[in-house]
Length: 402
Ligand SMILES: *Cc1c(COP(=O)(O)O)cnc(C)c1O
Image (cartoon, helix red, strand yellow):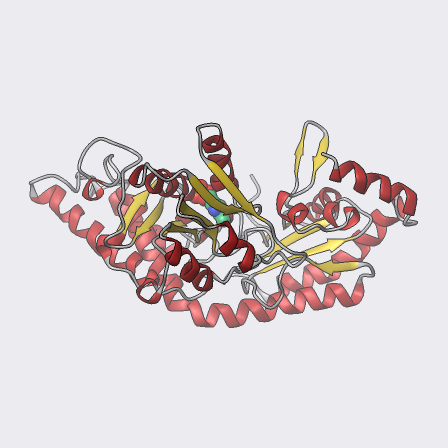
């Protein structure tokens, strides 16, 4: 097993902080009581869960009663969408975007087969929404608007509060997938228009298998998972105590380090990005560089395949990612970059580097050192290195007709 690498794939998952492990361990060993039990042995665990809930609420500026634990970000998204629809059975329309995470998109796709209509808002070349298009999509029949805070692939941040004001006027419920935003930018639910918000532990230096849904007090909610009375009847099932304790600590640490991490990561990210753009010809930054997570850069290296770059980086022990997934031998480009209308050559050669507060200057230097020769070597082998205009046009047309 490989256990050290230059890890620049923090939007996929993060390292669990050692302080988080430390506070979590006793709840896997000595303190295994059920937090709902009447006895002291269980009750003390219940108390620890309450403290963890307060720690998590603090990073959102929320009340602890507004936090419902889930098993992951995906469950949070599913639960929020279903709850909003169950609470307003007379309304049959949903508004979302073309660039959501599959945890939202695939739920919406299924709902379309169950009698709901869904508007998938488009984005421009920078990955930004058109607020007029949003406003025009809202009707009295709109039950839910579900839009991500920040995009996992490009880091583009949507103007959530401006969106929220328009959603409120329409009377729809406003859900935000903030899995990529929590712990990366400041959030405050007290002054927000958001009704429900999803977060996930493993994206903020907590463990996998734990997440939470923020539900604003007063918002009508119907549970997705039925059973016991846990989470005030909003999510049944005995609590994942060790993971809840861990998520509380992870949130506390993220909040503690937030300002410093933003400055530091942005500086490292910008240096990586600017140096690569300066030393490698024919590359572009994807996304909205003015409204962007401080830890993320998505760069398109024209005329080569992103997967080939990743494999080369992997040989140097550098972990990054491309939006596209290789399915049955055919390389499907990322739905996010496609929605942005990027040209074929950029679509296929795009790489995401996502940093965290553990990223060092030496690690960034190493990437800056190896990337130019990787790109040069791959381009020398590339069939479209000469920018064969006819061939490219054919590929673009094929893509447009899919
Ligand atoms: C990772 C991610 C999710 C899913 O979270 P899991 O905890 O892995 O289920 C949802 N939305 C976004 C934007 C993500 O980045």
